[in-house]
Length: 535
Ligand code: N01
Image 1 (cartoon, rainbow, N blue to C red):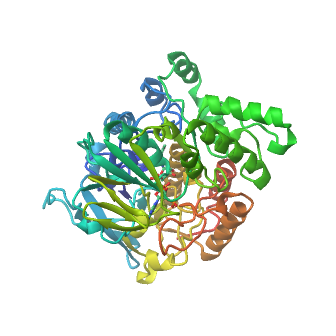
Image 2: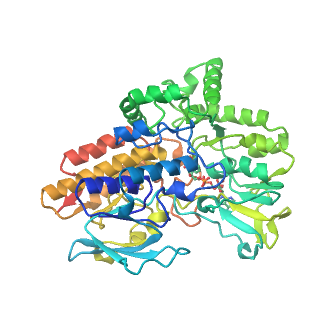
Image 3: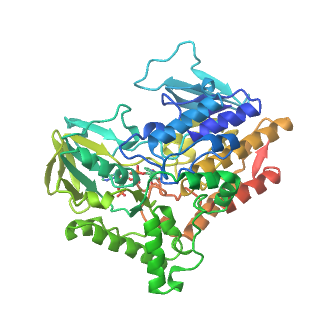
């Protein structure tokens, strides 16, 4: 088995593959394990799922021994955790670092994949003794949903004489922004986490905002040891309760099972107040129809808009920060001190919808309203999500068909796990599975366990290949679209739809609802892998 990526998906897949006695090799572009947490080292990078829930559940001793220090773990701590897992399960010798998978070709005569690798640009040229390609029966794409960083094509970018950084490719040694004039483009989760900390260092900070985002306070702080101990006393119960949640986390603060408009104004306000004070995603669990009903959703959106007007002192700046789309349609952001940052005299907000960016010049960014002189530009402009990392690899299935061509009109998978015409290729948290709408580690564990059981099933029966049936795949794509159409998710230009990448076909990629999905996957497996051809 070749596994592409040594993030949380690749690490666990390697562990399970070895448990099955497979000869498994991970190929990783980064210099160490950790995936998204290896690359995203920007100031303030922190998980938006609480640390006691954003961690592996597959090993009781592991979850008992690891001690998280904060309610929401920061990037360095999560990276340490990934390293600990790699060491504890002796995984490092199965991982080839600083190496990128360039191509993967299915050899139909032998029913095997040939995986070509190249040294990651910017790293040492690689060890000549190591193979330039791997030959394998199973290919697992553990490539991550948000790993293909996107820098917008802005005219003149190459002329800028200062430094530029993307949040998702932040230098390991850090960046000293003290006394610098810094411009940040982008106000999604990454920008919203980085901006308050960049403001602490920079002499001047200019934030270029295209779409105002909704953000709620994280209320991060030290993890209460008593709370951690109580969870550890029956960790399995919390894990299973989370698997019953549509988003696979947050079961400790249950969603209120009533519609937002079924209660009176005072009750509604009290619910939002309580969850705003508690902090985090539970805000969107205030009522059971916030993702389903526009009017219900508007009550939550209005609540946050009012908060922004209270928190930001300058009314004009506040209005620019007030979002107008459905709340939760783009992923809700979780912040520490974001709105207060705009009360500081050295911080300027530029709305690039009102005054679009015309060009990057040698000395700054020029909008239609004038030039903003800058020493540093930070791109917090996100990722070619869900398909970007897969399609960057030249994957060719039966008949030499390229995955890029098969997905020209948007990604098509069966269960988000298999692709018709690409036998024995598995996608971990692929498009068409709940993935980014859930706690990623829960989804990763589920997929890795499903894939591992599937491989065992084939081996036990002397079978060589498994391949999604084209009809089952089409029915699955329709199912995902149908489920999404009942929600408010497709109602705005989000990266869930690919709307942030110019020219990308707009298809809603993740499937809302983890428990139903999990049941469907189990049912498919129990029914002899219904919808797959086994040979
Ligand atoms: O990326 P984004 P991100 N000119 O795509 C703007 C996860 N994550 O890295 O909205 C000007 O959300 C773009 O504007 P618009 C999480 O799942 C989690 O912040 O497209 N602006 C937007 O404001 C998250 O959702 C955590 O109009 C341009 C921003 O750049 C996902 O990663 C932390 C532009 C991109 O926002 C991605 O988050 C960080 C242009 N040409 C990330 N192009 C936590 O766990 C883009 N933008 C907390």
